[in-house]
Length: 64
Image (cartoon, rainbow, N blue to C red; front, side, top):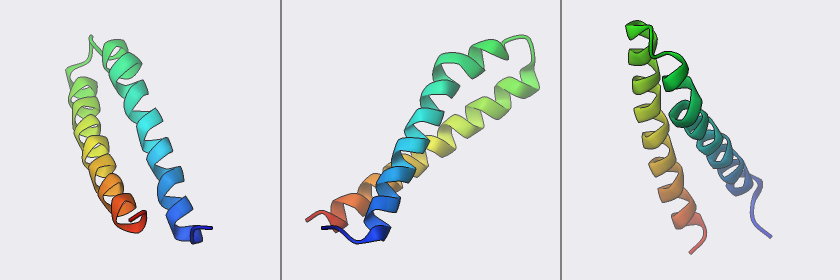
């Protein structure tokens, strides 16, 4: 059995992945008429990708 904090990392990775998918598949397209919103979604997309890389790295350490 894994420690709770490892499950927390996995749960957060799922949430970040779902949010990133929505940003890529819907939010950016829905905001195509608003440059400020497009900028926001692009920034958040990069943040989510960075968060996912960090979560993946931590999970790899804990699952060795």
